[in-house]
Image 1 (cartoon, rainbow, N blue to C red):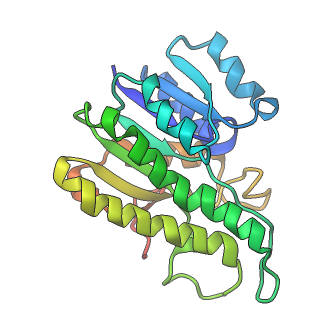
Image 2: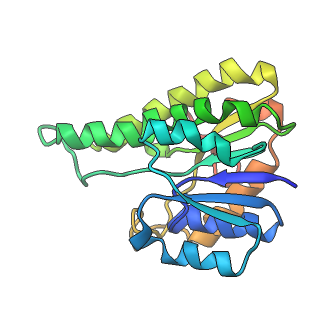
Length: 228
């Protein structure tokens, strides 16, 4: 049976993806960082026997390295865990410590997670890696400036995706960056354009329709390419 890992699964898009893959019958391992904000995820264990919920701080690299022991093999890794940081961050108003935190979670941790889980991904025929990015990390689409912290972290993880593609696609891996849309979550806010359900429906359709030819792309939740 297919095994899927989803990080940052306690709410929003991560929780939606968890429920979607549980309904397909996949074995899902869903991680959370804070138990106090994970009640809905933890309650799913009573409904689905194909769900394992685990605490994981993706920046605790010793724990991330040991995390591979949770798996016999891993077919699909969805790196959803992320952190927006302070709002605004206009020219002359960037918090350096917060910037470091955002880069750690959004840019460095996704690579370290793939490195740690590589031995169990190697056992799969699917070998699929999806990293949640954002079109605000697109260089071409940055026409408004500002947003230095979050923009740079997503531009950085896009570069990670391209390098992972170059390194791993010859071994049969499919690696891509995904823009989930502007979603009505705590991060996206009430003025966002689409619901979690709409985003998750599109993301799962894109992920499950991937072939090796798609590896290294930056795709919107509707399957359209996003310019780097």
